[in-house]
Image (cartoon, rainbow, N blue to C red):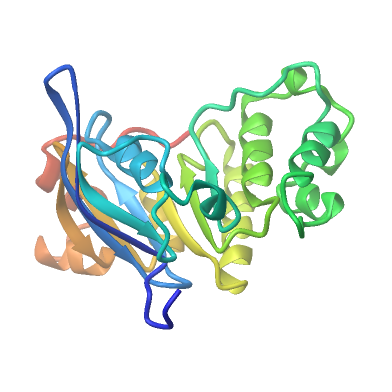
Length: 245
C-alpha cells in the first residue's frame, strides 16, 4: 500500500439482477481513518454497493480496491485487513458466544483478546449463552465483535444499530468511536440520521443506484437552505427515512 493510498476506492460500480439494475454507478473514496456514512431508502442499492466493496458480490462493471487490494482476486489478504458486519447473521445456533468468538479468533494471526471483544460490544454477561438464545440486538452486537476479531484496518458496518434500544444504540456508537480512535476506516450503512451526524466525517447518499450526494452532513443541509438532515434526505430521495430502531 502506498502512503497516499485510500482505505477504500470504488469507481463506477454497477450491478443488475435479471435485467433490473440494483446499482447503476457507485463511486466512493474513503481515506485512512475516515468514517463515511451510506444513506438511502430501502432498495436504493446501499447494501449491494458495500457488498461489492467487500468482495461478497462481483460487480458487472467498475473497480474497487481496499487498501490497494482487489477484494475478489486478493481475497485472503483482504480478509486480514477488512472486517464486515452484515444486516443478518447466519451463525451456528447451538454454539455459545464465547465459542463463536474463540472459533473466529483462530482465523487470524494476531486476534483481539476474547474478553476485550466481548467488553467492546457489551456481551460479557452473555458469553455462555447459545447464539439461538440471544435477542436480535445481541446477535447484532456479536456479529460486530466477530467483524473486529482480526484487528481490521477497514470495517463495513451494515445497519449497525437496527433493533437496538436507545441505550444499546449509544453504546454501539461508543464502539465505533473506539475504532475511530484506533485509526480504523469505517463504512457505515445506516438509516439513523442522528447516528450518521454523530459518527461520520462524510456521507454518501445513494438514490436509485446512483450517488446523489457525497460530502459532509452540514454541506447537504446547507444545499437545501439549512434544513435538517432528514428534510434534506426527503428532498433528494422523495421518501421519508426509515425508522432506525
